[in-house]
Image (tube, rainbow, N blue to C red; front, side):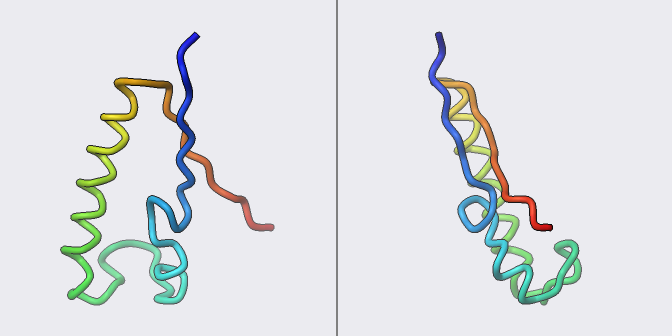
Length: 66
């Protein structure tokens, strides 16, 4: 059986608390100064998940707020 790697989405992959405080629904709603930082996070995330997928099944988890 193949190993599994779980990644937590909120505040591990995506800085969710920051986005929540900024009250942004998408990248364009964030101040311009953060656009390049979030694009870099996106690139790093893609590389990380692709590398992990070479070694195990990958899962992303997030908490559902009610």
